Image 1 (cartoon, helix red, strand yellow):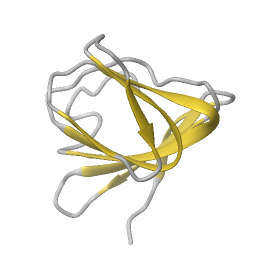
Image 2 (tube, rainbow, N blue to C red):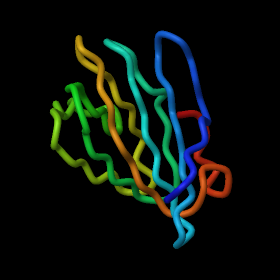
Image 3 (cartoon, one colour):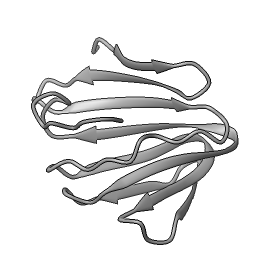
Length: 109
């Protein structure tokens, strides 16, 4: 079992919870409310994003949006600017990345 810690909670926008994994990496769950977006950001490590429910879009480096649905997985290379936007019914997604949010200077979610 891992302990989930709420790292962001913005009513009407999203809730982000992180869990430190035994190997030193981080698992993160984001509940993104309808039509809400994460803050655009980049970080040095790669990130794997898996859509648990709902649908939306992943925006990479200002390019065309990747439409994602439940069950889709997106690999985001380290250093790529990215943002996630939920569709009309919201979206829940999981991410994993190396290290902790603070240690990687992850910045705004």
